[in-house]
Image (cartoon, rainbow over all chains, first blue to last red; front, top):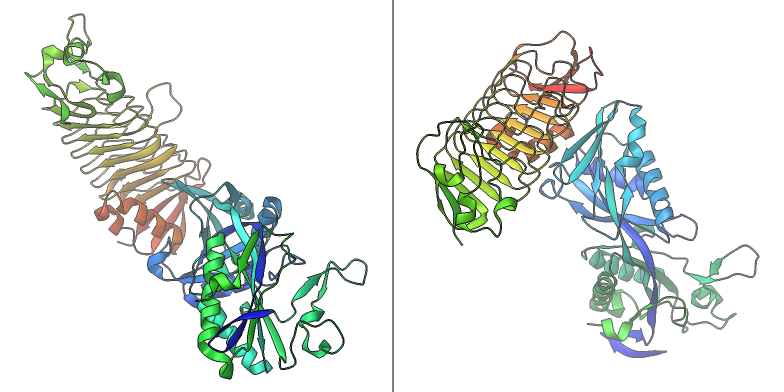
Length: 303
Length: 270
């Protein structure tokens, strides 16, 4: 399959296939960056894949006090789901259980516009048991909910976009697990510089890429055996003999362009690292182009 | 295009109702038309042309050169555009306005911004009693927008405030924020007796306290509130001087516990 080579790394002539999703963003602030990150990390736990988590969510960026509504350190979190109703459910459950509960936290809309609105503070305010206070400042409305360390301030709504894309991906193949991980980490680091995208798997990396379906009833996905190096000799493997490890980066973005930018940045980082220290080959996952309407051809994204 | 300008000829002989002189009323009318607008309030008929020399211009920006304590209802009901009064005005300036910017470079009489729903009312001088408040028989006062007074305000400022911001850089008379339903009142100078009298909800920020507090407010202690940061940032868009008073931990008095009791007075330590 590889047709293209860049800095000694084979690039498959293939494409990543991605899907339309609903997405939203929130900004979490706290007295310190550590506690803002803690609230966000807790909120985005168990949010790697819509297959079983209900949503895909992660920290998109760290915000300085000058970038947040209340002048405190903050983080911006992106959250993706397959429907508006599921996104609403996940948002209010996660903010309610993980951000409201985090010391000193406050929560604001992370999108200023969108096709629809999602309840944020409007869903959490009832925790105040009647002591909650609404405060409208210009076009924005905030809830102040009394809690044991003071008040939880939460903007009433955030917006959602229906232009979001989930499932952009790169498959990184290397001659050893260590070199493959180094290359993949370099790609994730580069991708994190791109606005409006997240890589929702642990540390941005998935080691258990899946295929659709399973031999077992009730399992909608199962291991991508063609990319498992320990099955190279047993299945119709996609791997050449020298490949000993494969990792995947899944990218969700608020726009298709953001996903493409992130893939481009990731590819550039892997290529720059070179095959001696990193990957031997780069591919991408797709379903033959029949399931998702967003196709990102690697040959178009290679720098 | 220059402003549509009303230049005062002489001090008026009677109180005037200047509510017709707003952008949405004057759009598309000639200067001669405008001169024939009745502005009198007695049996003696008074036309705009009798009171003002009118220079044609864009009705979205109206300038009234010269003011008088008898100029009542300036900008009443305005929904867009800008009106600047280069002098003082009488009662009910900006009453029921829903948009636009009304600037009064002098003092304003009672009921300025009464029942205001939106827009910005800026009073350079002092304001009379019941700033933003309802008239007799009305149940709700100001319900939106920003009302900014650089000087002092009379008694019962923000009476029955429902929503929006009333910002007073100077002092306020007794019963500031009386019967407040919600919204925010900020006062830079000392407030008179019993601020927040019978308020149900809403926030009163007092930069320099009050001459007498009601015993029906409960002291909730001093707090560094995130909400106060947001409030100060929002107030700073209009008055950095006023906002600076609230960028510190604030003591919170909950009340009025003689009424619904879900409002608050926030004040810095002296």
